[in-house]
Length: 141
Image 1 (cartoon, rainbow, N blue to C red):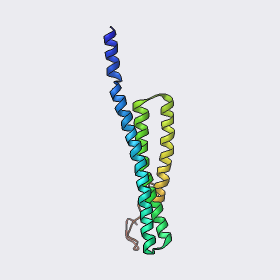
Image 2 (image 1 turned 90 degrees about the vertical axis):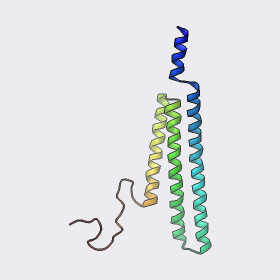
Image 3 (image 1 turned 90 degrees about the horizontal axis):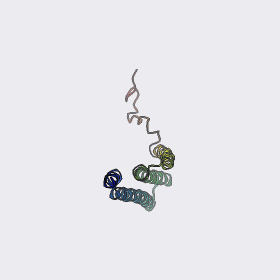
Image 4 (image 1 turned 180 degrees about the vertical axis):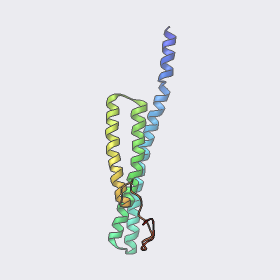
């Protein structure tokens, strides 16, 4: 009887699988942080290049904010994936799921705010038409 019980426990939650998921979650977290850091370095490099060329500071500032927001947005996606893997797959307790829900809610709000910063519209809004001629574009009468 004892061998059947331990064999069943081994099939339900093998130690190597939990360990692998833990490491995968850590790699996703590291990738998310790295993407945010690289995005910040890239944004600073773009602004520096524009400053050397003598471009308008308001354009450089806008470019910096949108570039930095893109890096943060992509990094947040990796961090949410790491949280999901770490919480649901490794330790699926009710308290951890509640914390995960709160984290995902906060990061979703940040993602929407960053998307608004980058594109000037909410993610569910259509992109404005490029055709600005009267009667043109997607406008129907």
